[in-house]
Image (cartoon, rainbow, N blue to C red; front, side):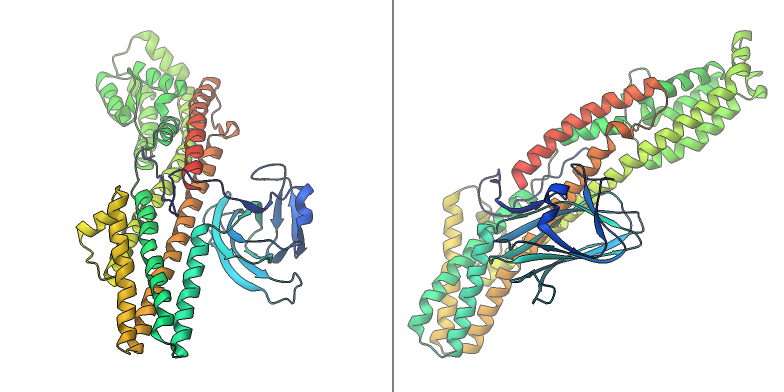
Length: 498
């Protein structure tokens, strides 16, 4: 597993540590709060595989629906955890709102959650509903090739940034309406000034996104958790393996011992107990050749000609088969551990690539935002937008606001309504594009929450794969440290980014 943490980007202007959001609705699908929902289809409580608490909601193959019994106010960010039955299971959950809760109401679709077959375990989904009205919530759940389980749903209030964005949409709509009614310049001037101010404010929002998207660094807690997790997949960490190596060297010739040392070198030094990261490639290149080497070392023709004393030859004859069987069992147990580590490593690498793409796209959007405001997208101006000096940022923000207002006013003064409409629509397009970065932020935080969840489950006591007591204790010692470091990392992530 790579030794780095992905500390994601924040979405709104404000201090680094996010303030707790106000939750307007939550459901952990325990018996006590199932009365929050009306149901259609095959959904029922189950005490198997709940993410938290004692129960989750299991929905069978096909289509099911959940309706909130009460209207919910100011629905902003929805977070929901979903687990498919198997790797073949896929699901699609459509989120709808309506003023009325009946089936034949005018339900408005606002978001879709989708998962293709290929992974199991609870996965976090975070989507923005962003409806300021008091509406009923409906979830249409479609599961294929297996059931799905839902747990820990909550909805937060709409954030200030979203409310401002909706105000921008009203301003732009008002400008276009006035143009259609051929109203005069004086009535438009104030709208243009407001449009320019709101447009320029997006520069600071983009700065916030980039500031956190660029903050990819090795967070110490997750690095330490990852380090302990890697040790748990290294054979050198376990007494069984060290004993097998010692016994094999006892019955090997000098050249065989040299070969054995070469084979185990990628795992670290046996004497100093330094443990290296074990990749799936390292293990696959080692396991089968090692078993072949082991079988050869304890073959009579080999140890009889290895120049051993009588006691060592007798040891090889009496214990060779058991040592080989112990090695095969241990390596099978270790492989399970390595699969867990490799999956987590792959998942974290995917998140890193997603953030890198997100950052590049956002940087391009920042350049386009400046160009539309007649500000060159030079390194100097980009640096001004991202400056730690608030006065520097305010100057370039004021310039952008003034240029947007001036350009719109110039088109209107010239009577060029065609170009004015194009300009306003392009301005609207750039403002609306910020929604895609909000959605991207939700996807990144969902992926990180899912990663934390899977990491945590992988080091749970019941996941210990080993048979021998000493091996089990070694695994648990590393797991205990990993759990503590992971807890610290998760708490820091939640505080800063959620």
